[in-house]
Length: 411
Image (cartoon, rainbow, N blue to C red; front, side):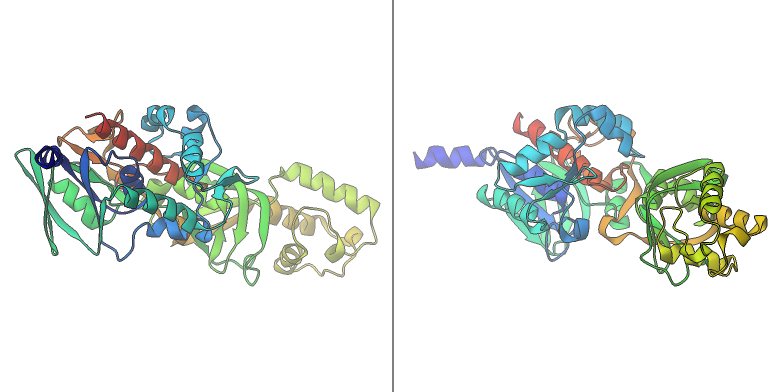
């Protein structure tokens, strides 16, 4: 009986997962422990670090968008390839997976999904417990320097010693070092550039009012003939918020070519200037003696309204009836057609994402295998796939990882 058990164990294939992030851990959590020896190699001192800090430490697990055709619209790169992936595992499946492991989730008003604990540790614990229960091995502070294909195996070289694998799952993220390793194995790399970043802007209108927000603004980049809308936030460095992050994601490669020097036009209230002019004149006719500083006409903070008056050099104590046509036009322009010069970017730390990575033409999206390397799987940010904020980048990881685990489990 003992001899039979030893023979059974000897037939188990060895899987090495390189990268202990969302994609790597979710793959491991869904692998069959009776068929495989699984080892996760993580170069940092702790696993799932990006999951930990995401969503301000709450972890935006996914997004409540349950139609794959709608879901792929949130991915500037990879949308065509992900359609088939999401038909097999989508946000509803992600929610079921965590909830059946005692991690209740909630859908917020903007459709972002978080654990009800508002703690990313709940998500981390669920995956770690699953991997631990399968008795898989997790090795931290192990940095892979090279992968060598040897007959039907892979030799994975690290400073801490070498590992041999029958199957490799590559979920490293998009660091230059990890991309170089996969390039040396024959894969084509699309040069990574930052995506999801904020705009550095120096302008008197934004000066000294960080924290001022707008529920729905419109941003255009005239030179690229592109625009986005959504919440907007004034920061110490310029502009942030979903509207900025979305346009930075969709135009990531073009903005890199511009070296992050370009002009934007902002409509802070998403209202046509003709409509603003009409509202203003109607208010002026009804309240001629009201001072302009106390005239609450548009959906902006008093702080921002008075900043416009300050920059336009309009006395806030001036009666609204006494405003000149030139002064009114200045106000309309600052509200609806304000041109701002962007001179650089700042990384959006919680959702640091890059556009670029392994060329998607070299991946079989039925199971996330390499078309170049046998028994070699890739998932996560190492691929040339990225999304806007809202839990979409994680969803790509969960879905890709699920496909990998299911494919391997059927071997």
